[in-house]
Image 1 (cartoon, rainbow over the protein chains, first blue to last red):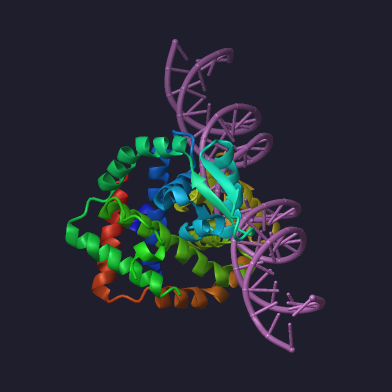
Image 2 (image 1 turned 90 degrees about the vertical axis):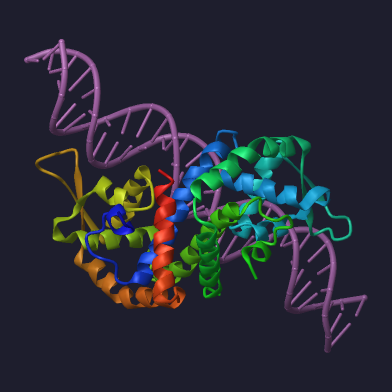
Length: 153
Length: 153
DNA sequence: AATATTTATTTGACATGTCAATCATTGTCA
DNA sequence: TGACAATGATTGACATGTCAAATAAATATT
């Protein structure tokens, strides 16, 4: 059963390319829903979880707010409010940078680190369970998607 | 430049599978933004555009509200409000089904049909401009994505 | 027939995404 | 220096996504 049946469209796609675009959008959406489960059951939204993973990667130095935004899929203005909530929950500390007072550095807290560690195996398991492809196809997929992203610039 | 650099993550991905998941999510997001341009410049949101395309495919018979939702990426409750707006703009007619008064049939209006026709070439052009892949890779991509979606059930 | 269940849709409340505009701070350069 | 532009972050206003609960009409059951 192809995407055609899956989306129950009566008319065929205008082009194979269009079918690909829709397939990517739909797959991403399905993935998002699937991953949301284990994350949201711990009281985090997917986006909050994303921020925490980025901050974990940044280590104790932390990162300026907009640097976090740049590493996310989302756009700038959303980050402030997301960070507000993470701070409220005690998962993030924020501090104005003394050398450049425009910047606000964000740091992950030990509580959040512990929570992430607890979630790691579940999430990684989910990924490998979802993406069951032979090594070669995995590489191809990554290459093709990168190709598409590059032609979007 | 791979997704790793692109997202500027310091730490490597936990797994190749995880990288693939993130690549799909990011590509979808980039695509969404790109397609949004020509659609929103005509005063439609991407989702509204989607609904209209589905209704066009359905022909003059129209479709029950939830049938439209089932063919979309989005979930049920959103559809009502989206349809409200399309009706306000004169792009959709709604009518309760006489044989089963629970259902509400939605039909695309001539005005919306004209608008879609006008947008078709732009959107199709965009698709083929974005997805520049040799036929073989295109087929592979579609196959792989379908595979992933199936293992999400 | 009367009640219970299911189906189709809608509403309320709230999280998130997005743009435009704003504010503070820093950097530039005439 | 002092006005002006650029940068980092935030806020306001509004569109959309999501869940849970409510409505309304059909179906199934006793």
